[in-house]
Length: 232
Image (tube, rainbow, N blue to C red; front, side, top):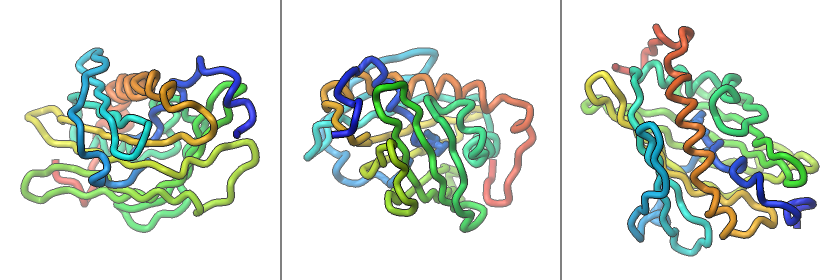
């Protein structure tokens, strides 16, 4: 049992949505391409705010539900890619991010990063390491972010719980002057937090992250972004 995790649950929303991530950042909020384990029961709409829809559904062989986010962004693929690749700035928009650091750049479209999720005492912070690869379909222009969870890439930090189980996919499709975004996440934050409490607060982090992302992509530093591997 992780020290402190069993004492209070009011900060559970802070455990959700770092994976953009993510980051991407979709961020990011961390990423494995969706496997058959996420196939099964239909999605249930749990929350909707400012065009952002949050769904959950059960996952085979897991007590923790998967989360899906659907929304539209007023941005180009290059603008969104610029936000996702700006790893140090992830804490500006990805919910509860303490830090996000690039560990290794493999190529222009592939890298490894390490992030820590900040959770108020007495729940222990979580961290994870993810290998990300960005791909675009030459015909449809659809953008995908695939990744691999690397829990043993770095030594664990005392007092921080390492996230070892995560599955996700981020799919972005151009739609006129907007982007249609779908993000699906299934993550076990580890420690001693009961699954029913995790499920209870599962929509808060994704909603806050995507509300922030809508503003982040409009910042001046990303306005004129362009990449040789992205076709807008």
